[in-house]
Every structure is written in structure tokens, then in C-alpha cells.
Image (cartoon, rainbow over all chains, first blue to last red):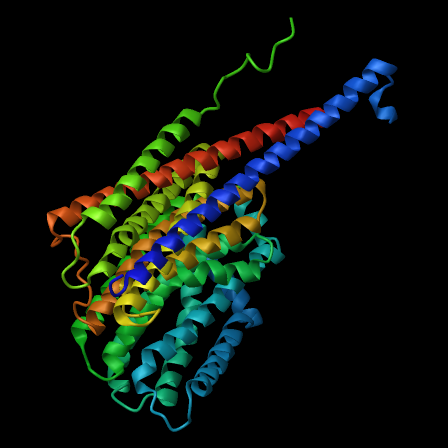
Length: 61
Length: 226
Length: 239
């Protein structure tokens, strides 16, 4: 590598690193949405299960 | 009609200040302490700091301005003046102008003390001959500070931790003013007496003031929109 | 008949197609311009290989200004319509613009090290300006985090407008000071670039702007689904 090539590589590495970090942040938000969706699914499952057994009013729980 | 409202609002701020003398006295004291700190922070006591006169003056004044701007809405918030003002049929533009004029007067009052002190403390050179040019620079910079300060202190007014928010919002926007005002002061008092340089910086300050006036006029309605 | 969640309703979220299209464009342009910049563009006679940082450094710098401009327009539209989608667009663009500005400062610093031997040069207007710009827009998020709801959106819209006004002021103040202290340090090299370099510079610029738009679309999609989820949660909690 000729003089200064390591700096060019470093600059590109930094660009890619920060862009990927940003994508990871976006991904973590998607993951949060997914987690909350799963929680909602569990709540719905529980409700349906209880409704099927005896059907007590929900605020009794 | 509007002029009477404007004058009444400015007089309200000044009368409050004259009665309590809280803000301007604190600002002047702060500026003096700041200059002492700068002197000792910059090094030995026998160094000639003439070359740095612009920087010393405008660093001091910028931080003093943050202090004063932060105090400028205290009465409105704490004594619920704002509620009355917002109900009264005063155009927001008049409120903006009145607050900016009040800040401008505070700054001028502080500078009447600070600018001569800078000359006495730091400058061994042709400072007093250039005092008129420095005054014009200071007035232009004060207009910039007043316009930007009114807008940003309006934004910080109802936020949590507003005492921290205001410097964080205000100081980055003030960097161009400090650069230009320090440059202009340096040009006339810091060594080479270069009037074309001084003119360039002052034109820049004028442009800053015009741009921030436009932004304030365009957005000020939305600041107090509750 | 009960409606089926999988077939009823919009098949795609609004903006999904835009995100896919812009993502594709950005990917292609980034690949093409990377190849072009490294393998095709001629070596600069003065600076050698270091000059290749310039393509992306400047392209990202301009793209970040585009992002702040978009945020300013979104802020104006928010104040006009009070539609929170404009607030979303404003925040998302400032976030991407800030990311790009940080990249400008870091790559600029690396360039300074490579060509002048120090990591930081106060006489290089681009480095200094972008440092100020980063400070201005970090304050945007500080402001956002300390107000709520309607007030938060209104204040941040105003700040996005005022911030965008301070950007050219910072540019000019640094350059005015520069022109007096060091006459003609930096001429930019935009106009007197050879055509082959200019072509690849324009390509890199297009890639970075497309990247900004793609990131913005993805970000907005995420916000939209978060909001839909939030509404769903509220309805479920009501029973």
C-alpha cells in the first residue's frame, strides 16, 4: 500500500461502522415492536382461553 | 397602538429590573469574575494579552449574555405575567420585539462597564482610539444576541431543566456571533488596524441579525401557542 | 363473516414501496460509486491516494445539509398542519443528518491526519463548521427530551428551522474569519476537478443522498408501525 492508504481504509471503515451501528439501532426498534406484538398475542391467548372455560367478567381477575 | 404596547412592555421589564436590580448587577459581576478567570486561565500575569482582546471580550460577553437571557423571562414565568400577556390582545410580534429590546438594553448596560474594563485589564495599545468602532461592533452583536436569545429563551421557557437547556441551545447558535464580533474587535484594537476586515465582520453580524429576525418573526407565533 | 387479518387491510404499509425502491437505488449507487472511486477514478497528482477520502467525505457533508434542509421543511410543515407525521420526518432527518455530520467530522479528521499530520486543524473550515453543526443539532435532541407531546413537537419544529438558519451562518463566519487569517487556504476543488473525478464525485453524491432517503423511509416505516402498535395496545387495554 502506498503512503496514506491506511488512512483511506480507516475513513471507509469508520463510515461503514457508523452506518451499520445506525442500522442496528433501527433493528433494535423493530425488535421492540416484535416483542410487544408477542406480548399482545399472549394477552389475547389468555383472554380467549379464559372466555372459553367459564367466561367470568374480566375485571374480576 | 402597537408602538404604545411595545413601549409599555419594554417599560414593564425595565421597571422590574430597576426595582430589583437583580439581573444587570449579577451580569456585571459575572463578567468581571469571568475576566479574572480568563486572565489567570491564560497564564502568567505579566503577559501582554492585547492580541487576544477580541476573544477575551466576547467570550466574557457571550457567557454573560446567556446569564441575562436566561433571566429575561423569569417574571413572566414565576409571577404568571405571561398568562396575562397571552390573554391580552398583544400581537406576538410585539412581545418578541419588546423582549428583544429589553435584552438589548441589558447587554448595553453591561457593556458600558465591561468594554472599558477590558481595555484597562488586558490592552496595552491603541484601544481607546478605537472605542467607537468597538461600540458599533458591540451594538450589532447585541442585536444578534437579543434576537437569537429571545427565540431560544422562549423555547427553553417551559422545558424541564431549562437552565441547562438554554445554554445548550443558545451557545452553538452564538458561535458565529462570537467569531465575527471577536474578529471585528481584534481588527480595530488587537494590533493591526484593519478597517476592511472590521467592515467584513460587521456586515456578517448584520446578516446574522437579519436572518434571525426573519426566523423569529416566522416562528414566534408558534412559541406561545398554548 | 369475521375479517381476516392476513387478507384484509392494506397489503403494504404506506411508504413500504418507497423504502424498497430507495433502498435498492442506494445499494446500487453505493456499490457502483465505491468501485468507481477506488478502482476507476484517477489518482490525484498532489495528494495521491488520500484524495480518495474526498469523494465520500464531501458527498456525506452535502447529504447531511440536504437532511437538515428536509428537516427544516418538515418543521415548517409541522407548524402549518400540526400533523405529527411531519414531526416524525423532522426528527428522523435530523437524526440521519447528525449521523452524517459526525461522519464528516471523523473522516475530515482522518484526512487532516493523513495530509497535515495532526488529527485536528482549526484552520480547515469544513472540520470546524461541521463541529459547530454537530453541536447545534445535538441540542435538538436535548430539547426534545425535555418537553412533552405537543410542546415537544412544536419546539423541535421551531428549533429545526432556527438550526437550519444557523448552519449557513456558521459556514460563513468560519470562512470569513478564515479568509482574513489565512488567505486562500482551501479552494474546494469542485470547479477545477478533472471530468473523470467529477463524474465519480457526482456518483458518490447521488449514492449518499439516496442512502439518506432510504434510511429516512425505513425510519419512518418503523415509526408508523410503532404508532399502529401503540394504538392497538391502548384499544386492548380498554378491553
